[in-house]
Image (cartoon, rainbow over all chains, first blue to last red; front, side):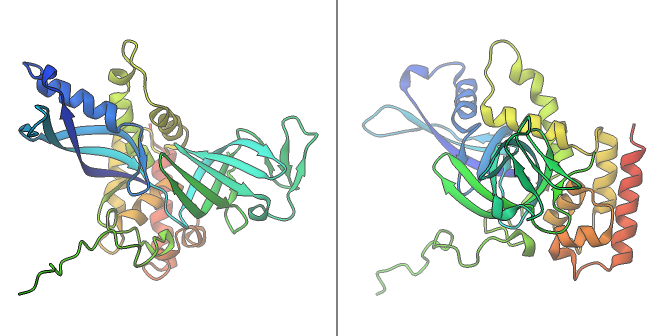
Length: 171
Length: 144
């Protein structure tokens, strides 16, 4: 799910940047620091929408650097367990299917794929096939997340399509 | 005198109850946050896109993948139809999360919506949900 979320970030600035454009500099540093990052707590921070406030700089004793507290609004993407999402298949192998849901990669193992779908290694491209649906690279599928693993700069998800109303999306 | 402050930060003491989208348990950080439709994210990203890609600025991989994704799956393409959907899905009994899931998945039948968003089961009866879905589909069909 995508959220509009208010977040905080603090930036430490070396004295060499103190000057007229300090606000602009703090902002661009914020964009650099947070956009595209991923934490287990907030999920993927896709983009900063608005900078709400920048605190006055606090000098750090003994260093000379200044610290700024920034409050900003960002679009974040955070997946939840048992959430249903649409995604695009980007890899098919005999172990299962990898799908992309925005920045998130979801792996659907063969246990999460309906038993009537068989892997066809000779297909071009390789695919999972049953009588009424084919899943290959580029197919749009609807999946449910059944497991999540938070890693330092990435979230890994396990999904399933072995339930009602999941699987290939008719176009 | 009590030396230990009893107010231990509550938040990160492990997960009391596991996050579970089927029951709309989203954790402290997201429980009351505003959920965005994929279509709304598309509008927001589109508005930024030119400034982001102007010159030789590099966009992050996360941004690019999110951008491609919302362009693929945005159901409502223009601001007016998104606003309209937002308006008629607005319902006090529904969580922001459920509203966004309804708009994102664009189910056709009440049965389908309840299977994919199980928390709806006890909140809406089939007829009310069905009329909501049909209205949304009509809007989707006739958007310009």
